[in-house]
Amino acid sequence: MDGFVATFFNIDIALEILPALGRGLLNTIYLALIVFPCSFVAGLGLSIMGMSRSWIVRAMSVIYIDFFRSFPPVVLLIVIFYGLPFFGWRIDPLLAASLALILNAASYYAEVQRTGIESVDRGQWEAAHSTGLNPSETYLWVVLPQALRNVVSPLIGNTIELVKLTAIASVVSYSELLKVAKEMQSLMFSPTPLVAAALIYFLMLWPFVRWLSRFERGFMERD
Image (tube, rainbow, N blue to C red; front, side, top):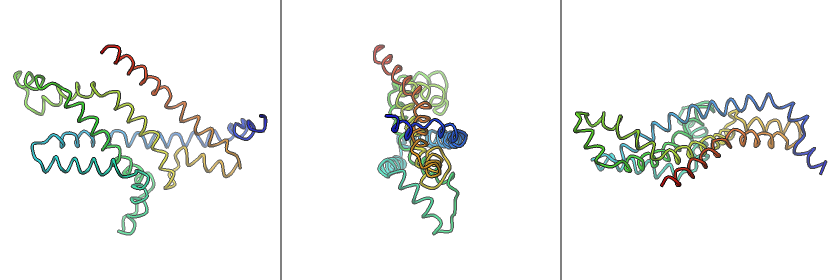
């Protein structure tokens, strides 16, 4: 047992690599803060396109969502980072990871947001119109707040998954938490850095997972 603990939970190694893991964690958070708002807004635009009166616009939305929900994000990242240079476009790891995650996450946010918008009763639209609001104002101030409230649980769930998915950035050598942990493992000849990184992910995301579970239970009890 002592040998197992010394190998996987070496406190001395953990304390030594903690500053490096901290920098990796900051890079992970930085990437997530770039990807989340961009993919959320892009998903909102896709959800609006999906309800357009134009079948061409609706088709474009459906094709985008189906394609990127079916395309593995790690493969997409590799194509962007290693494929675009053949066309003369060289991008750094952070930009490549951001693009891949935004393209992927937007398709999931779009489906959730579309469900939320469709859950708002048509009477809300009509009531807003009767007060003199134009379609854009009705959507922005009446429909959208209700729509997002109706799907807050899956939105939070998608965001948690997005933060975990930032680990794929290590594939293109972006120094996020997993990449730093792997480097420290090679330097220390110990799996402790990987265990420490896993623990950091857990401590960072577990409060949100716990809150989401309580929120979902409370929502079901109200129903």
